[in-house]
Length: 404
Image (cartoon, rainbow, N blue to C red):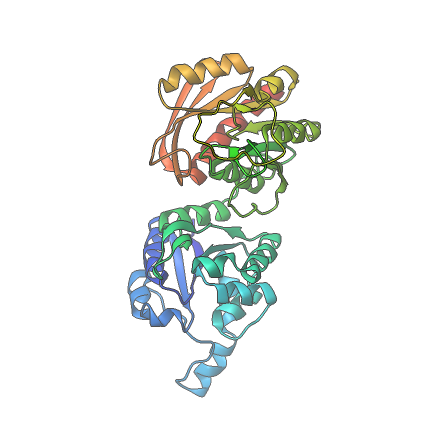
């Protein structure tokens, strides 16, 4: 069987050096790589690096400067490259490239190739935090998401410019896995409507303060994106997070546990699978003052009431729907996950230990899956994108068994 053929577009950013690692990661997965570099990318990495890694000519310009015959052939080379390859991945996808793609500008080989390419597109943005969050860039990202392009979202951390925040290119192995998923898409959730909750809730203490937790929403958002890519209609009910909406997903923003509960039951009817990945606050203030509480030297006490137990209520009312819950624990993971499975009436509970390097806020996770059959499946540490796919693998098995 012939290997998949992928175009690797390299934009002009400091993260271009990671594109060499990505080329190697793709080749290790038996993918043939054709590199196309922008003029800016060549200021950071020389074309010879990619030629040596891939064993193929690196395309750097839309016109050749060697001869009239070469110039004629290079003028239509973008069409040939577009037709010969199975997927286009751009990493780093700079703000400039995203703007060109979004608006159909074609002033170099890569942007011209993009317009001629009809296969799946994977984009891995990388840029300064302020550039990423600028309204123009966000609008371009939204345009490209609506076209059905897949995104490997940038990481947060220390950037080359000295800032700390989102904008760092995702790790090459993570991008390579996204490419594999796009090349070999599963469609085993077609016909299903998946209702997913994600992120924290915020329970007000007064008009300016609230109780919350450290949930980033990354696991729920990864599940939503994975379910959509596998053919499901996805409704994502999200607490307050700092994440872009997944492509092809209906997102319903909420803030409090009560709002999340109401949104879940308002959207329950079409759902065939429910995934409760949100970290809902367990308590809220019984009576929220209308004015800000003033700081005093005296100790104050707050009366907190339990928030609605959405998972338990779903367990009683789910009917023939498949119900998946989550358990974030700090100790006794296996016993607590099993206990929650029985107590909540779920079909499966995903349990994870909350630590500094995994779980909340992290891009990675390691979980166990507790099933009603008594089976306990351990999924070792991996990216949340990979964990989401493994969870959905089990969900599809349970769904098939339920239908039978």
